[in-house]
Image (cartoon, rainbow, N blue to C red; front, side, top):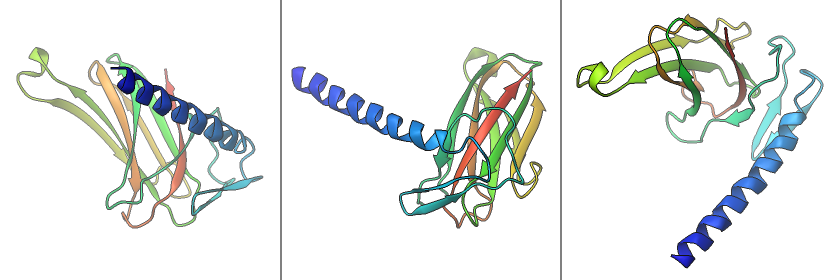
Length: 163
């Protein structure tokens, strides 16, 4: 038990250290079009044409695997809420495509998985994705982001607005 706890503490320390490094990189993107950075072997280029007006939720990169997608928890939403999700690319050649999936399981789903799915490729302008919808059911929602052609690993940021 002590060994498992020790391993868990080491893992938590690594995540906190990684998070601190990402925080510094994220702050570098506060002025679109004015800065760029390198994440691993990827060059991130801010594009002023597609600006996220409010603060973004972070800077993320898709994994370098076939059909590598980023998955983000939007959280629990009540039916009837108006949701807008904007995904902005920060990598040359990366054309973000996004989907929001709402899933319900259990008795209310009738022994199945009841889903609501929303998808977009270029509605955000400049090949960026924007999904605008009203939540049809109360439940937990996920954002899934990948490359439209599924050939380019890329970095992006996203913003979720709920009204």
